[in-house]
Image (cartoon, rainbow, N blue to C red):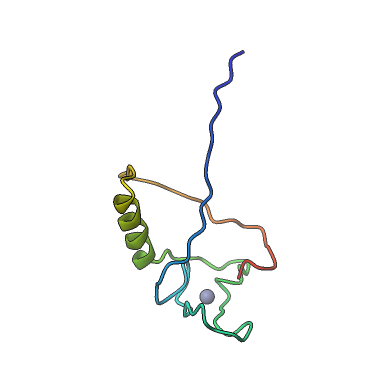
Length: 88
Ligand SMILES: [Zn+2]
């Protein structure tokens, strides 16, 4: 049996969007108080439905184009449904 290595990259970036990636909570990296800009969606409460931030998607695509990356016509992802204490 031959194996073909498949290597993926997980890249984290901080985008200058008005709201967070999956809800309408304010995205304020300068906020110094904990648990201010939160809601059930970004806390990952059961039954909440995240909605993707179109502004963030546009910025990511622009970044990909600027870096001469291949931009796929369609892509999909799954939101993590396990909880990290720092996830919110
Ligand atoms: Zn939120």
